[in-house]
Image 1 (cartoon, rainbow, N blue to C red):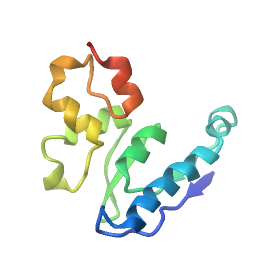
Image 2: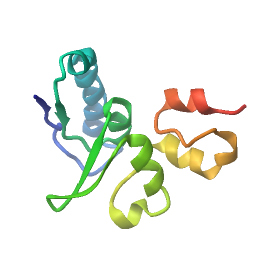
Image 3: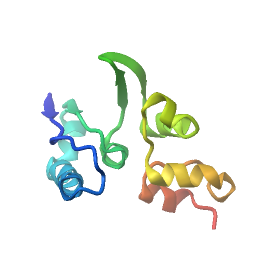
Image 4: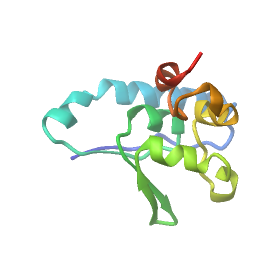
Length: 123
């Protein structure tokens, strides 16, 4: 098992430290060889609040609420469910998911990453 802790949390998304944290989150996960967890059966646990990072790297999500498991599933299963009531439950969805859910007729399915949006776009 390999644990990847979250970087320090800051509330203001425009603050340079938050932008820097987002960049470091992606770099940190890209440096970790994803093939090793699949080939060797290694479990990787990532503690992360940046949903775009989660959507890009996670095979399965476990959403916690006050230390209790609230939801388990793939990003493709979980994020589209939370689009309409994300503010009520405190779960933010990736921007591409939110935008695609407003125009579902343009997509074969609701994407959770930009790469996926390119694949399922009907245009």
